[in-house]
Length: 183
Image 1 (tube, rainbow, N blue to C red):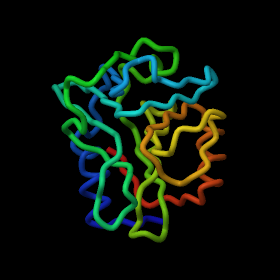
Image 2 (cartoon, rainbow, N blue to C red; image 1 turned 180 degrees about the horizontal axis):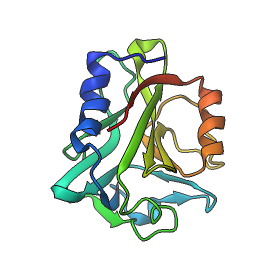
Image 3 (tube, rainbow, N blue to C red; image 1 turned 90 degrees about the vertical axis):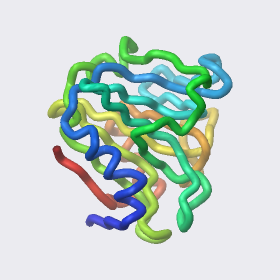
Image 4 (cartoon, rainbow, N blue to C red; image 1 turned 120 degrees about the horizontal axis):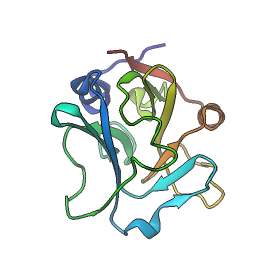
């Protein structure tokens, strides 16, 4: 079920479409508190307090974080071609990590956006497939010590590297597909 709205296009789909099928060169995490605030369960879930930057060939960039969008909850998942944070925020390279290495050098093959049927189709999770098979999911929920989200929105960015976590959390939060993009 697609639930395309002007807001969904502006704050999620258009920035993803702008990078098209460009090849991923590098991934950066931003956290105002520094790298020591990266939470990692070492089993495929990472939580950061800022944003993710994807750097693509041809100097294209995609940032994913949360933003205040009228009509959506205070912390709505959002994408942009420009940073949500000051460039002076703590930023570290993640492309050589065990979780991101399989995506580096691959093109974006598919993007699936999950969200809520009510609240004007607010996005909550972006599932990005690199090449034809490696998928990462980016969501915004509150930090939880047990790495299990309890509320359907928040001011932290969760990165899910396991399809089973994406499915389990999507079902728990009652998310549905509200949009997609295939270059």
